[in-house]
Every structure is written in structure tokens, then in C-alpha cells.
Length: 112
Image (cartoon, rainbow, N blue to C red; front, side):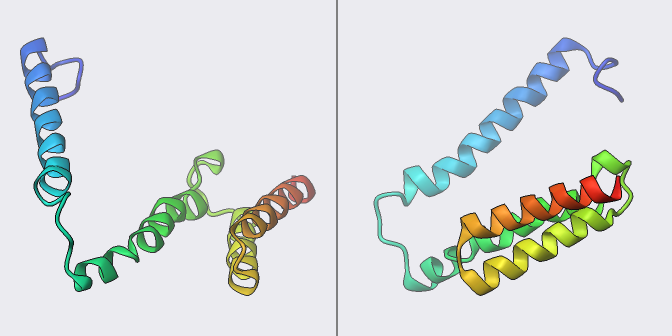
């Protein structure tokens, strides 16, 4: 069933259900346990959330970019590797982003 085939009542029911589910997930952490100290083992695992989420967001854009119709592109792969290398050796986020952007720009210019 596509969105165009769905009647308005069902659509609003789905939207309200998703809104309530999203609110309940957030409230479980912020409203129920938000003012209590978390155990050390939970805090230790939460430190790695950004490290796990950011590659998951970036990987599809590098491996299957929409700009190339989903085909892997050597310029984007090289930019990703340059970003990782500069970030690893310098421990500087802005330098890593700059190196990746410069590599991507230069290789897109050189490769056409």
C-alpha cells in the first residue's frame, strides 16, 4: 500500500502512533530515570554511542552515494580514508573534516 492509497484516518492513526512511541522512548530515559544517577557500566557504554552512530550514518554515503547512482566512487573512498587517517594521527576533528573535504573536492575535480 502506498501513501497515496492510504485513507486520511489511517494516515493520522499511524502518525499519532509513531509520535506516541517516540515520546514514550524519550520519556523512559529523560522523564523516568533522568534525575537519577546511572550505573557506571551504563555510562561506560554510552560513551561509545557517537563512535558507533557516526560511521553508520556515513558509510552508506561513501559506499553507495546517490550522486553516482549508488555506484562506489574512488573519490569518496579516498576522501573517507583521508579523513580516517588524519583524524587518527592528529586527533583533530576539524583537521580530519578538512582533509576529507579537500581530498573529495580535489579528486572530483581531477577525475571529472
